[in-house]
Length: 114
Image 1: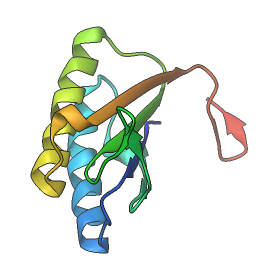
Image 2: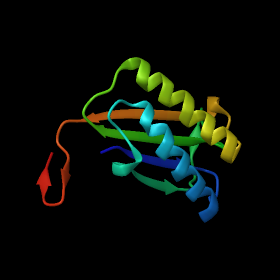
Image 3: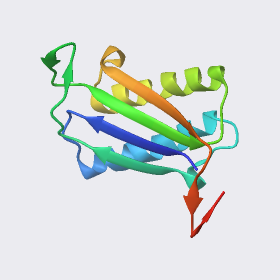
């Protein structure tokens, strides 16, 4: 039950969103037990964002939430992969990307909780 949300200053096209969604679906498998089958993704492009006190044209904040836990090395691999995808597809410099991980112990779906 992972969820990846990307907020960026880049104006995203539907084609870019679809490509990112597909690549994130592969990348999430770097976390043990996670797959695209349960992945939810959200995009918020064309955001006004500030970094280091300045309005920057090409930055992103990514949130990854997952039910359960993953290891430090798994998160390192996923950070590297997500940063690479955003660099490749949107031209974002990895030094302009923050990625936050949140491990969730209570996750609801279909009227129940896991």
